[in-house]
Image (cartoon, rainbow, N blue to C red; front, side, top):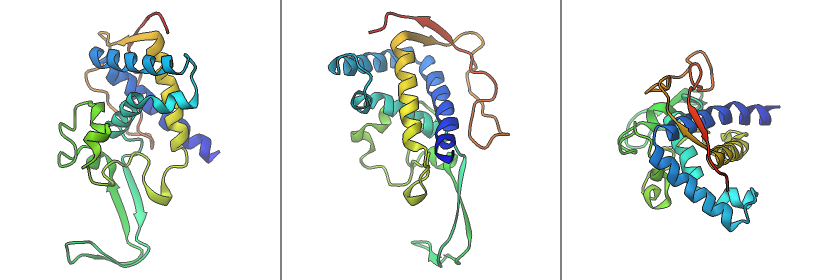
Amino acid sequence: MSFLRAGFDTSASALAFSVFELARDCELQQQVRQRLRAVLGRHGGRVTYEALSDMRDLTNVINEALRMYPPANFLDREASRDYQIPGSDIVLPKGTGVVVSVTGLHHDPRYWTEPHRFIPDRFKEANSRDRPNYTFLPFSAGPRTCIGMRVAYLQVKIGLLHILNNFEVYAVPATPNILRVDSSKLIVTPAGDVVLGFRRIPSM
């Protein structure tokens, strides 16, 4: 149950935020669509695990949505031993609670150029090579990484693939300029409905 639950709410949230951002950038949406169709073509039009793994543009879109709208605003941990913070005289005694602001980290201009813009290409290998480790923590890291992470990625990729391959998604008058989150929920989710327009297009 933990495995399924961990991968469900985060998947729904990431899918909603991804589609919202793509609807606001038609040029980017078309580029992603063309590239995923090219990958499908190489795999005989079949949606296989191998085909999904090759769709790096979809992965970049999802990662950028997770950066801007991380599933959890913060991570809480406890020091398992006395720990001196490198470069300082501060020592965290064993048992000290530590809170990491994931949202703050994901919007820190020291690590992310124009952090409030949706730029999936920042996750291309060439653009990520010099980024410090542990600056992208949508599912935590290490032995405490979210158990539903792989399921979440797979579900969101499949959802985005079918949406983009069959529909053009666009902003309508009721679409907000800024998508606010529901502060009453543990998992970061949109506050209210995400109103978008869908226009069917010929699928591959």
